[in-house]
Image (cartoon, rainbow, N blue to C red; front, side, top):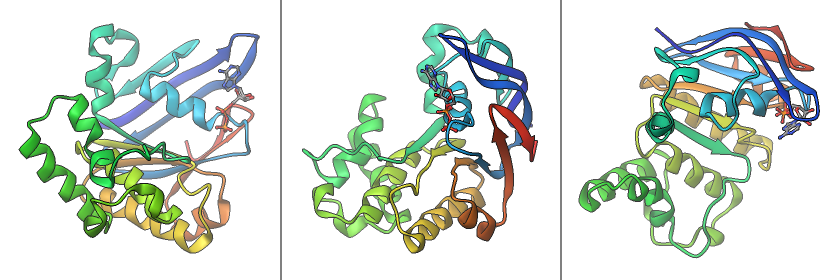
Length: 221
Ligand code: ADP
């Protein structure tokens, strides 16, 4: 089954700007791909359509076997819980510990605290930060902070992991570490789509690459 499928998707923002034009592609369940293109090419918009942070102006977006246009409003939280998202500026809270940052999505979903603690430690262990769980993220390096962001994105074991420029603030060695982390989650079955304009890194990683230019899909579809 396709994890994500776009059929003739266009997005025009208010003011008449075409951010996406007739985009067709699908990503199979368990696949890992990069989404690339110049700044303004439409990468973030494409990710936002998957997360239902924006709606397409035309065309169909499917996530799993769910047509997002048919999704009831009260099902949007359920939809978002199937997806983990990593941002460039990781959006951590500096008034609480590493542990509490990662636990946040589980608290919001009303998890049992004992089960939540077990999952948080499993997630921190996967990103190699278990021994820092009681520290404040502000005391950690930028690479470690991004790994907290990744732990928080995968703590609820999403089927689909999206990332928007996850290495934008990192040097090349740390960027590669972060990409290898995404590969590890992909290896255990998570579907991964990473928006990045870092072509040299993408080429070194050697996965399928979907390229947007001016809102049109120009290769990898
Ligand atoms: P990328 O992530 O590849 O840099 P974006 O998806 O952020 O591209 O943007 C694609 C185009 O849509 C850009 O021209 C951008 O200015 C425009 N755009 C993005 N968000 C909005 C918005 N909320 N309102 C109007 N235009 C937008």
